Length: 165
Image (tube, rainbow, N blue to C red; front, side, top):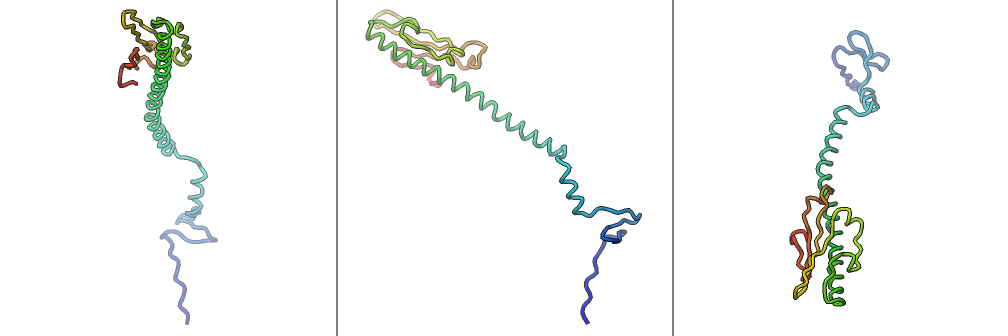
C-alpha cells in the first residue's frame, strides 16, 4: 500500500469548484496572485506620491540655498579677478606716468559685464608722496550680491575683507 497524498487544506468557509475559490455565500473570490497583479497595474497610491513629493521638497530645501551661495561666490570671484587686473594695470600706469589713474577706463581695463551687473568698481587715488590708490568693488543694492559686502585692494596688494579673498 502506498501512503495517500496529504489533503489540501482550505480556509474554513471556502470550497473549491472548477479551480475557483468560493466563499460560503457562493460568490467567486479572485485568487491571491490575481489580486496582487491587479494592484500593481493600477498605478501609484496617494501615499507613495506624497512620500515622493516630501523627499523632493527636502532635497530642494537643502540644495537651493547651497546653489545660491555658490552663485554669490562665483560672482565675487569674477569681481576679484577684475580688481586684480585693475591693480596690475595701475602698477604699469605708475611706471609710465609717475602717478596712479583715477578711473578704470584711464588704466585701459575693461570690466566684464558679469561684474558690472552686480558691482560698481571705483578707484580712489592719493597723489601725495608716495602715491597710493584703492580700488573698490561695491555691490549694487537690490542685486544678489548686495549682502556680500564691499571688496577692496590697494597699491600694496592689501585685500579687504580678508575672509572674502
